[in-house]
Amino acid sequence: MRILIGAPVRQDEMTFKLYLDSLKALNTEGLEVEFLFLLHGSEHLIKYLEPHQYLGVTPGSEYKRDDITHHWTNENLAAVTYMKNRLLFEASAFDAFFLVDSDIILHPETLQQLVKADKPIVSNVFWTKWQPDEAEMPNAWNYDHYSFLPGELERWREPGIYPVGMSGACILIKREVILAGVNYSPIYNVSHSLWEDRAFCIRAACAGFQIYMDTTYPAKHLYRESDIQEVLNSEIPS
Image 1: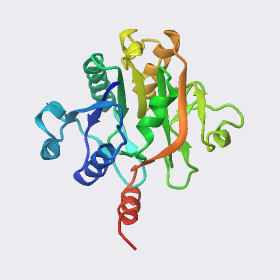
Image 2: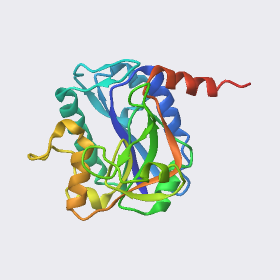
Image 3: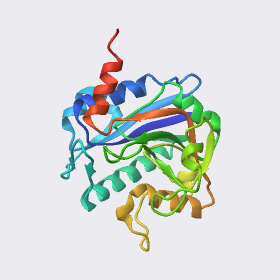
Image 4: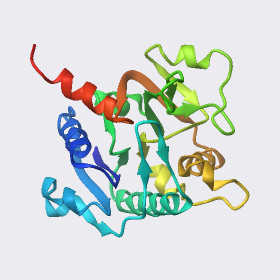
């Protein structure tokens, strides 16, 4: 099975290095894996990649984040949508595309687990405190704008594969989905300000694809500086 792994990237060096190390540590036995990234205003990251591992450097729109949250603009969203669609196009020559946002740290067995699930679309769970004083929330939901069915959040804490309404950021997409025309482009009668992943998932559902989420190996989301420090501290031998 040939799998393209990649993402749009606008990232600081430390986070990207941790991310790339995580991807390189994946168990790829029996798989043919290639990396491809679209660098968005991130020329400083070229030194970590081989020439065939990135498409190029696009001009970077202003993107603000702090230790509270991330601040997305319509310009940011348009850029990410374009880049994800470009990566889908490149991935159409592969059996599957593993989209992993550039601030996600994976368990080494994640890819094998998602392949074993054998679903057209399957994401891998991670949990994030979108605000420091809020509870952790997953990268999937059941319907509308981040709405959940009763008991789902508790159920997703248990290892398993669950049908979900929408998901993103860490997701394995089979070639059949890409060839069916499912993509991240805006839908004219749905608010695109509610993330490009929502448009992708609505298109997938309309094309007849059920979306699943695997919770066997939760990923780590480097959403704040404190998350980065937690990962760095865990690598220091005691």
